[in-house]
Image (cartoon, rainbow, N blue to C red):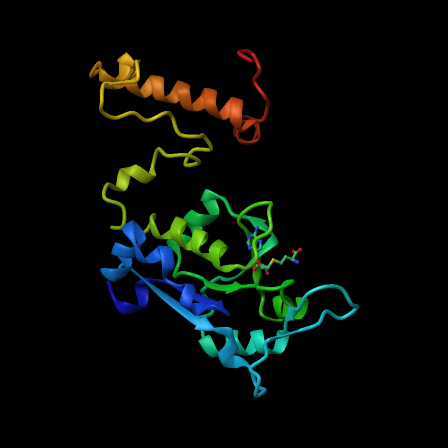
Length: 240
Ligand code: SAH
């Protein structure tokens, strides 16, 4: 693998000291330390031009809070000099909801530039002018894009070749087939009067696979009918 092909996350933020943060430990941290991916936090404030290094201003039309300036953010993006094939993302509660297929697509590419908003958000014109794709990590509002960016990066990094111990462990987990994962068990054999389901210790691999499949389907129908319908086109209610 050459330097250019290593998956990269370039993060524009007002708080570069937040990185790598949780991305510096465990699976993602070990992969970072061993050079399986690289992280480039960049301080948006370095692109400020006045002597107070200001990056925001009051919203046009009035209202609470402050808005990140288009000219400062555009200069920060341009200063990264990113390759045109790299996705340019803006973490935003208005964005396209992040899903495992999007994560898998991002993980298979060269790695994104990620802009983290703060305050009330960013000036709309920089989103248009720099072709930023807005991505949301859920229907709730964070105080900044950094934690959202970390969630996205973490989800991508664990899919990179060589990061997860067993390549297979990414293949039959939650969302990989539009299904939630089956219940997992490990020792002890009995916990507070609850044994591990007998079938799992039977040694019959075909039966184990069928049991897991049935559990996955039942869980998905009960908890996430939206996922079930997306996969099967109709809500099957025969067993409640
Ligand atoms: N006023 C804005 C919210 C700003 S929150 C609105 O109503 O849409 C400040 C910043 O936090 C945002 O610019 C974005 O970068 C980040 N953020 C907040 N919630 C997020 C979410 N659910 N997903 C991704 N980023 C989010």
